Image 1 (spheres, rainbow, N blue to C red):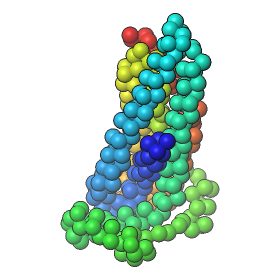
Image 2: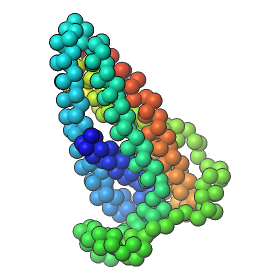
Image 3: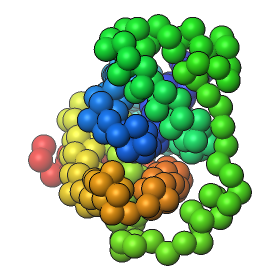
Length: 289
């Protein structure tokens, strides 16, 4: 359970950073250093990428040991129908519960990301200005950690959106079609479950579980392609319009806010699509093997 809790926290951190990714553009627009903002945020994203590389092996080792033990015991009890044996079915239910717990970490991390967006935008804007003065990423990181012990001063600032701003975000009419939010919802739900569904597909088809796990990359890459083609270009266009003064900043704020809400709903939807995706990967694995 300690390892599962660690994976839960890693997943929460990964999704928190993913939620803040788009809001870094708002900091770039405010400071008029959009390219610097995107470059500096890649430093933050490196931490999430490292956490992501830890998440998959930790989960895989846990699932592998669970499947191996259940499979060997079921093989002794009912060698003709291992997967259908009560023991193996109980193991599948327990494994599903554990993987859904990890998905819950994605939901909580995304929710936390939404709450800290105002603080992040202000703090990251300060980081961009500090980089402009020092010209060193290492100095920015050093000053950031120093200000962590002095909340409210220096680079790190805590703030909340005003009620008037929040009301505008909810009530003003969006100038671009809202279809991209549904594409983001679908792609984020699939991206959230791709590795988890692959691991569960391996449990459903233990004889070729390595193949089933690798098949999960199809789901993950499809989700990325959808996001890159249907979501990011629209966000980039609005960002450029706000940066050039064609549109107000509230327009970009609104899109970032609703994309973050869409991410949150995507993690909730992933609870529903987790097993169907796993079954689909299992059938696809059986087809190619």
